[in-house]
Length: 131
Image (cartoon, rainbow, N blue to C red):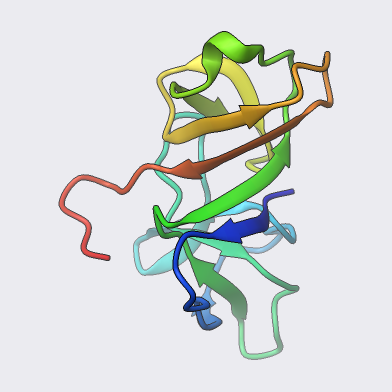
């Protein structure tokens, strides 16, 4: 699960309420696809983090992903200190990361533990995204 660890700015992202596919999990990374939230795939750039269950109106509460927000999550494989400063991919459920490079999550800190270790970092902005 992606949770906010700290912010580089004093402002807090407000919740937005967007329609989405069934089954998006709390703390998972999501993107907009055809006007609705969808789970991110491994190398996708996360646009939102889901903050609660789907409401009766079909919308999820989400926060917008900003490069100034540092998230904490778990890694499916060991992420050692050599990965700090590099991009890694999302796991299959989009609620954590793998040690595979080429994703949009930039590692800023790792406890270097084996599978299930804590990783902190931020999401690189999508090309052409405004912030």
